[in-house]
Image 1: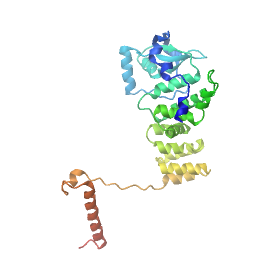
Image 2 (image 1 turned 45 degrees about the vertical axis):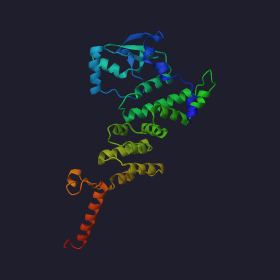
Image 3 (image 1 turned 135 degrees about the vertical axis):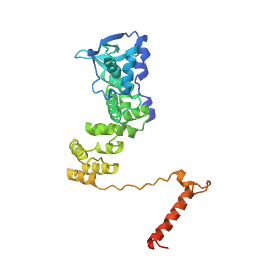
Image 4 (image 1 turned 90 degrees about the vertical axis):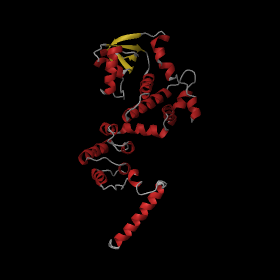
Length: 310
């Protein structure tokens, strides 16, 4: 599989979109574009939040301005579509700016999508929804590009990019397994409300992947129950919900029964080292301490069976 990926003849991210290239080595000009003429990338999956990091960026913009120009392309309906620089644009707007430094490039949909995704995937602390939609958009762009043979290789690149190999390219670039990339992409099949619960850490990643196989109608009914019962499915429950859905038996009553069943809660007792060391020699290992405690508990239990009197 690796050898196939190496044969792909695609211009690298750095070659196409490096900042050094953007600011003049190929003669491109930085233009000052009114903010009202800069529109977000269609389907942009990365959230622009008014959080602490954004406030820091606003303060920086007020002092230094925009140090790195954005990248945009002309829109057929007028204005420009931002490819890179959504957070910078928002910060500039909050800082009271009216124009933004931008490099204008003629890029097709696939080139623009790949650059938009790759430039944002380099950020830290991405939300699950951002990663999910970014991987999906990149996969679809690669597949569309694969469908257009180049002049030099008569379709060889297209053959290399087709099918599962496309997922493997993303996995290799992102340092993730192919399965994990596919699992992230599955999250895009969730209702927006359920996907938001994953971002908010109210619904765990693994159960969410299983729930993505439910139909939209089933997910809607499940969401209502989650809100009514104030509970979310465990992984084991999510697997069962998926199974009933695939068998065509997942009605609301089945969902209710699964979500309201009693869950076994493991008993966990934590004994702090400070408390234990007063009863054991310093030479005792944790295993030796455990053996002594279990032995004493067995003696105590035997005594309880005899009525507790000795």
